[in-house]
Length: 397
Image 1 (cartoon, rainbow, N blue to C red):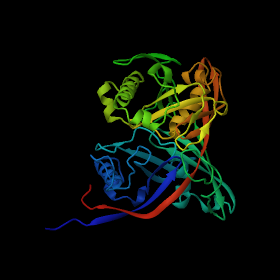
Image 2: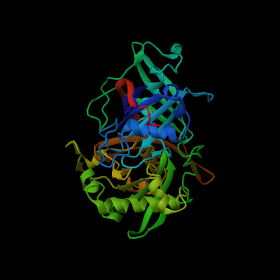
Image 3: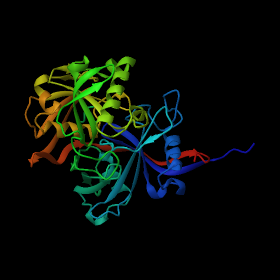
Image 4: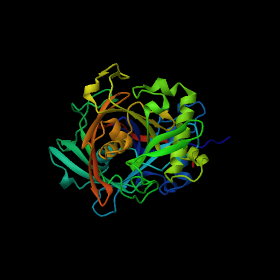
């Protein structure tokens, strides 16, 4: 019997923020996978090791969590004023699909360094020592991200003393600016910042009740609810949620009905095929707690508590795109986020998450009764973990 040999594809395995994924240059993909469609999805699923009924992704590059089941396709941008086009694919762990409905804010920190290493940036723009500004087109949602990438000795600086809770080792700081994070996007999931027109809605969730909710489209569509309204303190760690099937089912129901209220889906059943968006998060006023690493977080050091779910599980830290939503909502008085943070508008907030704290800022202003956010800013770090080729069976796609 003849067996199909494996093929190898140039790839880079990178950490960005508190996530990691497999990065490809579009030009390096097999021809059939250079365009959207079944071949591309099948390739990326096989690279990551999905679908895996065991939930471990042993036969692939994935790490069996939403933070590590990620892929990126990048190309030199043809869009004026941009350096690189960035397409993000969230690979389902146990189901056969890739979700293209949103961005990964954490991996956004790795796109600038990857673009430089891939030759997408004119070498004349790269200083011997200093910072290079990389303008990124986020193709999933039709947004611009500006990354400020540190350079040392003519190469991307990856090591440093910037500490990011949720990441074990310090690294070099990469500052990210998410431009017009709440403006209407060209990609799927775009729309008004507050799709219902309200800062707070009464969201009816069968089996749960009627919850106050802030439904916001900024960074990524996000549903914010009050922790106390669903029986939580806001200081929970992963095991308190992820080890409770009833809690996970409740959050998925909230997510599904919130998605329908936001106009992202027409029927609640469609939420199962759209796992990456929207996110659901719960907020509470500041309180002290012990993070997952054993670090003590003091109430006086934070503005509020936030816990968020990604791909059906409580995130170990905070998704970068959800952090943009947090910063944006905190800048607008009257949202549940700003109320949890003391009830006023914040130019920046430091919030507590399961792994520690994170600071995010947003520039907001009111025009004609409508709120406009020009950009959200936060810092992450990124590092190449491995580069070379990834191998998949030749009959994968």
